Length: 577
Image (cartoon, rainbow, N blue to C red; front, side, top):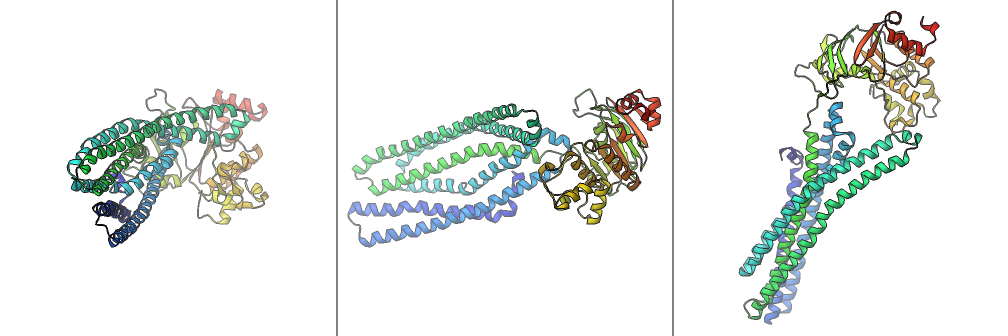
C-alpha cells in the first residue's frame, strides 16, 4: 500500500474532495424517500393539502439539485485524481525500465513490459477511479439506508440478516474464482502484444520468405488464447449479475409478503412500506456496487501485482558504492581472467578466462566465427553486461567503479542491429551529442561517409526518418549510426560489424577517417571481413569464447591457421602472402 500512496499524496485534495462530494450526493439520495413517505402517508390519511404537495415538490427539487452538485463535483475531482495517478505511475514504470540491464529486460520480455505499462496501468487506474466514486458512496448509502430502514420498522429489517450474508458469500466466491482468471487474461495480452510487435517489426522478413500464412496462424493462436481467457473471466461477471439481481428481487418480494399483512392490520402506513422498500433497494444496490468493485479489484490486483514486479525489480547493473566522478581519459582497456554466462546456471560459458590488454589509442580488430563471443566481449566494456568472474578495467579502473552515465558517455558503441528513431536525420544524429553544432554534425557525417547521400535528399538533414529507419537503406542506416557515435567524441569507439552493408571502398574511407581523425581514441572493430581489420594494430581471433590468437595481420598469417583459412576464403592469395 505504501508503494501506491506515493501516487496519491501529491493529489490528496482531489482524492479527498471527490469522495466528500459523493457523500453529499448520498445524503440527498437517502433523504429523497422521506418526501414521498410523507406525501403517501398524508394522502392515505386524507390529510394531504395542496400546500403540502408543493412543499414536498420543492424539497425534492432542491434535494435533487444538491445531489447533482455532489455528483458532478465527485466526478470532476475523481477524474483529476485518476488521470494524474495514471500519468505518474506510467512515468515511474518507464523510468524504471530505463535503468534495466539487458538481462532484466530479457526476464520480462519487451511485449510484457509494453502490456504492463499500458493495459495493466489502465486496469489499475480504472479501479482507482471506481474507488473514488464508490468507496464512500456505496458503504455510506448502505449504512445510511439501513439506519433509515431500521428506524421505520426494526422487525422488518430482519430480512437483511438473510439477504446481506448471502450476497457477501456470493461476492467471496466470485473473487476466489475471478482473480486467477483475470491474471491469466493479462498474461494472454502479453502474448498477443509480443506476437504483433514481432510481426510488425520484422514485416520485411515475413514478406520476403512468404510467411504471411504462418504468421497469421501464430497470431490466430494467440488471439484464440486471449479470447478463451476473456470468455473465462467474463463468465464470472455474467453469472454474478443475474444472481445478485435475483437476490435483490427476492428481498423485495419478501418485504412485500411480510409488510402487506402488517399494513392490512393497520400497524404500518403504506408510505412507510414504500420508503422501506426504497431503502432496501438502496442497501442492496450498494452491496451490488461493492460486489462489482471487488470483482474489478480482482483484475486490478492482478495488474497491480504485475506493475509492482517491474517497479520492484532491481537492476542487475547499477553504480557501485565506490563509484566516483572520474571519467575515461585515455581509453586503455584490460580484461583480467574474465568469464561470462548469459544463463548463470549454465555450465558452458560464452567467454572463458579472457585476459587481454589494449593500449590507449590502439585500433583492435576482432574476428572469428559467428557465436564465438565477439559482441559479448565488447559489451562488457560499457557494462551492458557484467562478467561473472574476473575484472574489466578502463584506464586501470574497474568499470564497476565508474558511474554508468560517465562510463557510457565516454564509450561509443555501434551495435550489429543499427537502430534509428522517428524524427529527422539531424534529430537522430544529435542522439550522440544534443548540443552539437551544425558544423560538428557535418564533420561527423563526412567521416562516416554519409554526407553525399544526405545532401542528395530534398530536405537534407531535415529529412524525416520513419520509425526504425525503414525509409533508408541498410548501408545508409549504418553510416548514420557511425556518425551519431562519432559525435560523442568518444575515448573508446566500438564498431560491432557495423559496416557489413557498406561497400569496401566506402569502408576503406571510413577506416582512414578513423586513423586520421580519431588518433587518440581506442577503436575496437568487430568484423567478419578481413579487409576491415587487417590494418589494425592488433587483431584478435576468437573461437568458442576464447582468444586463440592475437597479433598483427602479418604475424597471424604466420602463426594462426584459423586466420589464414579466413584470409584464404576471402582474399586472393597474392593479397595475403
